[in-house]
Image (tube, rainbow, N blue to C red; front, top):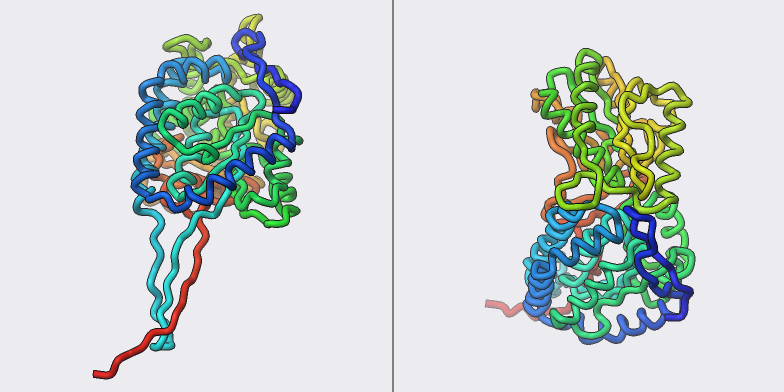
Length: 467
């Protein structure tokens, strides 16, 4: 690795955790060359073999689940128990889910054509070398979301991990070798977006680019990839400012639990966080009390049994604190938190704002921190209009008891996922992706297979024998 070193810190202590060499363009070229060489034979490996390798990798992760969780916690800042029981557990299930598609998903069709002396068919083939760029908020989960389906489809990969959280991706490389993946199939480079990331997007031998991250960077990814000679297909899973509508007939205890997980999951560092909570005016005040009570009970720390860790680094910490100050300056009512927690580590108090107005910065921009915004509405029509009044469209939520009304609302919300009386259910079988500035393409589920395959038509003449 030729690039300068990057030094990720432990968010809980602000101390340097490790020194990792950052890849440059030449390093990316080497990784892509290895992936291209491996593709020649890997694409023809039977689906059953790819299935077995995915299952072996999942089983090795299960054997090392505690170790992976501890390093994910040190690297990212989430509590160890959350990293183990949520993040690593979801990643394991993702590999097992796509193992099931590896020997079933590459199915084409036979196509009746008007020329009866001709036979036509389609076959699905691997798209080739895939360039993946993953974020720092869910490092091992995002790796699994990319690796599992592309392996199932017979592709090879060059992945750039975030310079903030590179360690578990390197650990996964070691486990992949132990599982028996051939050299060159899975390649990981650590580094920065403006060097390694750009090199991946521009590379002439990469046929697909997958990116998860902010909408601002997503626009740059699409623009840069468009300049590649191969014009690679691009999948973008980007940011959000997701609304949660709490109807007047909602069970408020259930709704408060939904809002809590929707906003405070992963210390608010979640692209689909329910960060615009629209509450019917008749239940608003009572709902605010319930949300405050739940947020007060949050236990800060990274140890076993804690609920909320620190923000990932000082950049994110300062950004979140800036948004909190903006909310106060613009007249929102801070009913809980609103300050740093402790003197060491990038901890932010769980914060709840009430009386938030649509024009406020905290109501319009993605905060990516433990900051809840509560807003009143009078009619369902108003709530839907305000919910859609954003450039984003990643997710949305609805709480209530009238399912017919909620289904009607769901049909009108411009979002890739609408959760009803629940939030942040990331089952591997459910597709995930956004509308508008929240990206395009779908991760997870059978839909993800389309990201990594090309459809080829094959046609040939036939002889029809007369009876």
